Structures are given as structure tokens and as C-alpha cells.
Image (cartoon, rainbow, N blue to C red; front, top):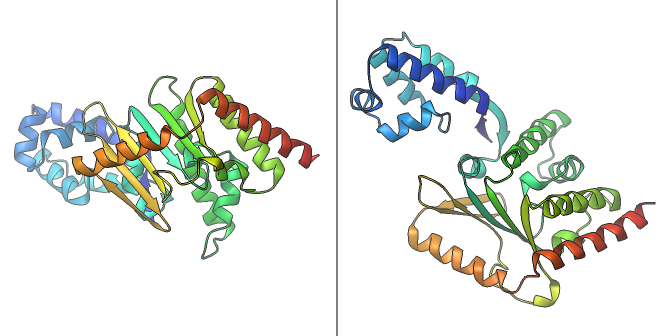
Length: 274
């Protein structure tokens, strides 16, 4: 497993770095030259968008004469655990201004309800004890904070119909999960599209893909499989993933029809749960 940063502590780290840099009378550019770091990297650290590694922290301590302060501060950034292959993608997810994702089997992590997420995390192999599962659950639920602002990031989610039909945790859990998605869709916080079974073979049949755009970085693509995932930054590959997504979107139901289908299936689950 890899360590996910604690966003609050990361912001405090950045504020402390800015204060110490300004107290030393240095600009970001001057600090970057003396610490052999890029100015952009320092700007991201000060804004709480990036976690410095131990080598960064040691160079900052030397240049700013802080006696090991920034190196000692690093452990306070440690937060809940996430899968190692997802750690880099999570960092990008928190910075994105636009996310377009396709999920073939499960509701994407930051859209999952607590009951649904608990069932998913309880089903993995090797089995996890309750303490480990709850740490992972807390990390997954915290990802929903990406939706706290109404207009950023813009989120488009395309789901295979199998996501709606697969009984994760039973009918009551599924009813709650689908109704949660409907509320997000009806509130215009996210845009939802369902790829129905009768679409047959489609362009993104092979697996999960997330496309992310940023205000100050080139777009990326994240593709995930069984216990594996990869962030793609090569422009040609990212462009191909975007084209594949757009092609599949043409086979999907409209936002309105997708919400109607989710409501209908949720009602079926509700009747079954009674």
C-alpha cells in the first residue's frame, strides 16, 4: 500500500514553507535555484498541492537554515492508505478541473456511498481485518470532498449497465447507491451516462478509464485493471484515450434517460428490500 497525503497538513506545510522563505528574504525562484528544485514544484508545495519527498525537505532545511524542521514535518502529512497503483492518480484527481470517467463494473470511488464502499472493500483478497478495511473506507469516503464545490471539478461519469445491475451488498445497499447517483445527477453536480447492454461491444469495453484536465498542467489519462493502474501523460496516448471515450459516449444513453433508468432500477431494488 502507499500513503495518501493529509490535505490539511499539506496546506499547513506549504504555509510554513512560504513563511520561512519570506522570512529569509527569498523569492520562489531564488529558493528554487539554491535548493535545486523547480520553481513550479516549490509553488505547488506552498499551495498545498504537492508533497515534498525527503530529499526536497532536506534541501529546504539546508537552504533556509531550519535545522531539520521540514524533514521532521513530513510524517505529519501521512494520511489514510490507498492502493499503490492509485496513489499518483489520486493526487491528480484532487487538482483536476474536469474529470471524465468510465466505470465498467463498480461505481467510481468518490461517488460511492458508505455502505457500498464497505462491501467493495470487504470483498478484496487477501482479506482485510476490520481496522484495515475502515482505514481504507475513510480514505475512500474522503475522496467525495472533490465534489464540495458545485462547479469544480466538472464531472462526467459513464457507467456500464452492469454497474447498476451488479448486486453489491444486496438490494437495500444498491437502492441507496443508485439514489445517491440520481441526486447528484438531478442537482447538476455531475453528468451521468449509462452504456446499456444492448449497445453491445463498445470502445471502452476493456476497462476503467479516467480522463483529467487541469488549469496549469497538460491533461492525463488513468487506466486501471486488476490490482494495477497507470497514469498516462504522453500526449498521443492521452489523445487516443479521449477519442475512445468520446466514441463510447456516442453509444451511451443521454443524461436524462440514464437518470430515468437509474430511478427505475433503484425502485426495483427498493421493492425487493421490503
